Image 1 (tube, rainbow, N blue to C red):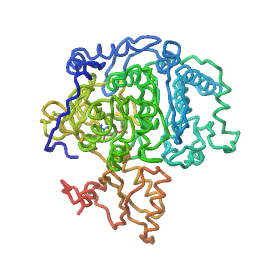
Image 2 (cartoon, rainbow, N blue to C red):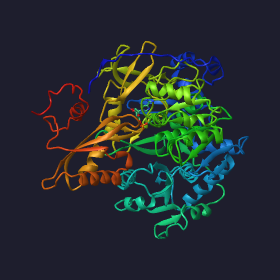
Image 3 (cartoon, rainbow, N blue to C red):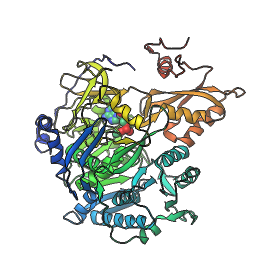
Image 4 (cartoon, rainbow, N blue to C red):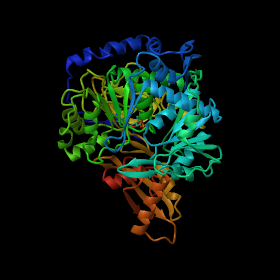
Length: 630
Ligand code: WTA
């Protein structure tokens, strides 16, 4: 891992209209940041006080590195803040959720009151099924309102949800069910994608074999006629819902009780089950939604992520609902039935805040501005990006074509582990394409060398967070060593695993991962995960994968494979292996190219040197290769 290097910085500055800053919740960034620095606990306490608690905290935080506690002894339920607070007050008839299916006219709207009552009913039904506080429930669902109802119902009764993205294959799902010990799986027979059905239940059927903790499966039947269910284990979603009482009190949760587990790729071994807790996570998701997105009463918020990623947890569900916003969700993909669909949805529903990923923005750029230009995008107020670096060309296009040179762009840097936005250019501040921006008030971020010394502006280094924050992960499920490694690798700082560079004004440009994580279309993949999927094929003796640049997806997976003696390298075998990875992990992990090789570059201790493969592939300098065997 290189720890510092020179980066040539070219800067353009975009100055937003001053009225944006004057009318924003945050106001003067510098003043807010200084206010935070003067009294960090007081700053967070002020945010927490905007929410409702059953009992307030004894301490804002207890920091016993690397273990943090936030809002010690406070009691709350996040669904009380996302639902009861609005549904029993003035927002009762406000629209909480708008769902748009793939087809025009497939629309469902739920007010806060309606969502609240459905969640209570489902929560009560889960209780009757024997699900209690602390049990884990796995959700593997398409993006429909029932998904949101189910996950909020879990939170209402204190069950820990583990949402698995519907694009993952059976072995990835099985690994997550097993590691989290899920007692219940909630799924749907199918999802719809690009006009086709995606079988979800069939994957669950395969994934629950060898998952002894699973007692029941709830199935939302969307196809007609729906599949037959096996009554020993399977129950219909609406039958469950109807068995619930009309009300269900929110469970009283300790601030440090777990709220959810969400798996993210690790550099070695199995994916990591990142554990977030109720109190701190709620405060972080609420704060960033209100103050970073500058969310106002009449906003219509559309985050194009899936609830299976942290972005969906924080900015489809918990953040916007805790603020009391109107949230748009859709099963639609950006290019079906045509690449104008997202802009049509913006126009149809008057979306004001739009949050997507650079890979989508680059796809829109490629198909041309005639698509967005067909629609009226005047409702847009703020546009955002997350998941990987937003390159300056994509920034400029997004700003001009979508934001019409008037909407601020929020290039938000954060992670599954951070739970909330950490670095961005707050609305109203000068924006610099290519730079995410500065740490938000509440966050202390820096770029350092391997010893933890800050590097000079213009020198690349490692991105770290120096102080705890409320929505920080509290554990890696079943793996304390991996949790500790985040805080114990560099001088007691939280190591993000990203390379970055700062400029003279403290703006941070994130350059990419410093480790073996490949980001394909904004989705993290561990090299180890993909390699072990390949090696699980009988023809493969050894495998190594690297990320190679892709103009739209950012990166794609390239695999190098050594075959077991007796197997012949053929195109048929390449497609078998690609299919094998697809079925195991899911379509995002599918290699875009496979090379059959006789050997792989390794260190003397036997570790594969992926950077050597990468250097060969891209024709660049491999760096220090003194540890390379022969
Ligand atoms: C990358 C997603 C550059 C980064 C919320 C990080 C980014 C990883 C940005 C976390 C950004 C996320 N600019 N890179 N604005 N946002 N990343 O856990 O490498 O799915 O470490 O969380 O995505 O991905 P994760």
